[in-house]
Length: 156
Image (cartoon, rainbow, N blue to C red; front, side, top):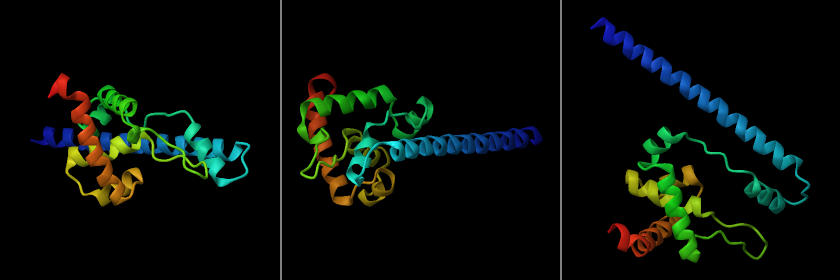
């Protein structure tokens, strides 16, 4: 019995260390992104936002953590995002009149999949993906309709 307790304690400590390491890595990435934005030759806030969108995407989660969080492998998620953004204009990133970029297809699909995977309310997605409640509900409706139309012949 003592050996199990020791293994449990080791496992908990290991998870705490891994959590701290991931947090440190995330903070380092955020600092790097902040420095790239500050160093960009931009004068207005919209140009700084645009510079942020142009920074190379580095995944936050490794493959195992991604699978646990989204309940699917990352290549499946990216295939869904790519298929929907190629077929439906709603899942394409657009630029509005003041030349600000809208929500990316990754944000929209992430919001919908998180709601489907965990059954969380729309307002809970706001903290995670930074999308309003009404937009999250709209994303979910469009995601389900589009997914059925695109993948119906192959999977459904």
